[in-house]
Image (cartoon, rainbow, N blue to C red; front, side, top):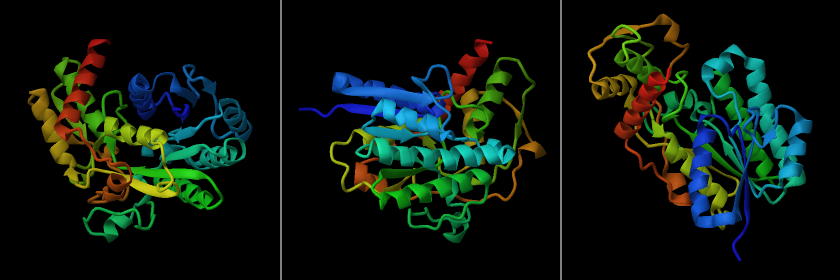
Length: 322
């Protein structure tokens, strides 16, 4: 008899959560009524309106949902927001994860706990490995508030696996796709190009540091890993594990900009905006994805050029609707 899946998504109304819901809707076509998706967040569209930082609300959520798997996405996710509101970032990203993990152990002890961490937790380890893709065994040495909150939550979830939490930790690298806000680099470039295209701004694009190299993924590839981890029949060999979600290669931000400009067909001037330059920058960041491939058969499938084209097209549609 097929197992009933009750999958709870926290942070369900966010960029990644929206794509995860779509991915699970597609899986429902295969699994039918055996797949129930429950959403929790602060948006009105959520099944359960929950502030993850409030322990009582989280306990009520887990008791009420009785999930078979939790995919924990809720976070202050933009590094700039975490830097501006450090207390809230710690409350949501660390305390919220703690609330959820302990409530899961108490009220849904058989539930899988799938934690969406971040490659930002590696921080200075990218400098230590000198351009080689980092493995999961690399030390967590975060260099910003967001990375620190995610590293602390990651360590917590890893420790609780020894106390019985059925956890799977992912450390996704930079991911983008249609629907992302312009707080992130690809979307920031695409939005400006869409505005220029629509005649809403002069042919000049403001940028930050273009020399850095980053490992980019499509959000649709990332959510496929989360869905696989929640739905895989036998997760025994994977519980307590930690897995990078990465392409294994880094691309210079300058190349991303060049590709987007080429896709737009525009002639634009590029200007450095000091406001877009951050603090200490890591020159090169890439992740080794061998562990995820071995455990889940996961590897990225969507080409970067397609992702960039889709993001640009999405912004053009958004501009046309204004």
